[in-house]
Amino acid sequence: MTALEAVRGRIAHLEPALSRYPDLWRVFSHCFLNTLETTVEQTKGDTFVITGDIHAMWLRDSTAQVMHYLRFADDEAVAELIEGLLARQAKNILIDPYANAYNREPSDYKPFDDRPRASDWVWERKYEIDSLCNPIHLAWAYFEKTGREGFLTEDFHRALKTVVDVFETEQNHADSPYRFQRSSCPPSDTLENDGMGAPVARTGMTWSGFRPSDDACRYGYLVPSNLFAMQELRHAAVFVRRLGDEALARRAETLSAQIEEGVKQYGHVNHPKFGDILAYETDGMGHYNLMDDANVPSLMSLPYLGVCAADDPLYLRTRAFVLSAENPCYYSGTQAVGVGSPHTPAGYVWPIALCVQGMTTADTDEQARLLDMLMHTHADCFCMHESFDPSAPERFTREWFAWANSMFGEFVYRLCEAGTLGEVLDKAGKLRG
Image (cartoon, rainbow, N blue to C red; front, side, top):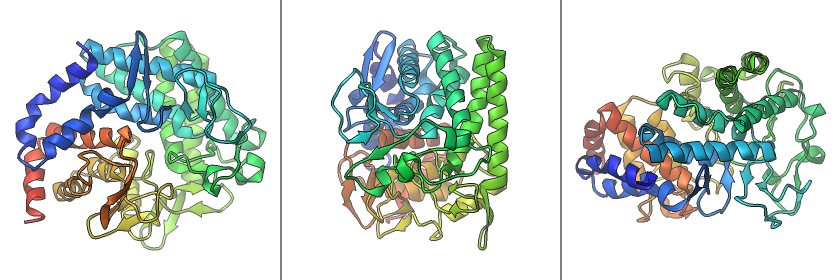
């Protein structure tokens, strides 16, 4: 039995419940299975997962695209899929830890004129902290679910060391070898200052060139990604101890503590309306970027990633800011309201952000509103898009974007697991009469 057959069988029992709401089973089943049906290229011991309409594999996207399958990892085919992906992710990190997206095989085709020219294995070389966090995040979730350790290979060990090396290097970006410049592109696709990005001071945090949106950071210390790194370094320490590498475990824990302290000292802002909240970015020199982006890791996604509790007071104050007009990426229209991104047209809302909002609250009224929005803005495509015009959902970006589909599947399945699906569907059904 294949992983697709296994997962299809495991979700079939939900059809009667989801069929209470028009088209929900159709959209849910399409979204939940989309990664397995359209993006997976698997051979023994290796799983390559494309993002959708771009035939390349992102470390971030590939993780997010399979996270909702971990609940079925007791099935051998699903476990093989996950372990094969972890093997490929480790291989990619060892090829180039500063890359964000990779080819399945070497190719001299380059879609952009980037300097320095990347390896033929690399599709794009935008350095993003979360790219290195996500494989550890996936490995930890898989380990917690199954207790299996077959993925802890020598390559995975070397990849974890590489992650620690890079994060330590980027604590002092002035000494970093990383540069990135792109010709004939919007400013968000290249780094200023001869490819180094805006200047930063040393803070204990680790620098990032780009956001999870693949847009350039305004200031180099990306707070949600640093908090994600803080957490995943602790998980990395557990893994390398199991591999007998106490020295690397201590380095990872020290680095995690330094990042945590850096965020405490430099990542907080006293907002006049919301009080003490987390900034999205800072440079350690007194400059802050107060916003949140739809892409994960985001400030709103911190409980979804396990970084903090959903009822943490600092998080709740930050979330209130994110879901307000004070956030320049919070958009509203006649059909939807939610967080978007400078990566897509101004005013467009992201289904990923709507799903994250739904998975970081226990408020069934809020969840019902979000489900209703998602079900009325797919433009009769019966899938999730990257973004859409909240007043005219037929205007959207990326019809085939597997990450967004996976997030919708995860959102709905979590409602089933929480036992609140019926309540949410009843409330959603009443919103439009």
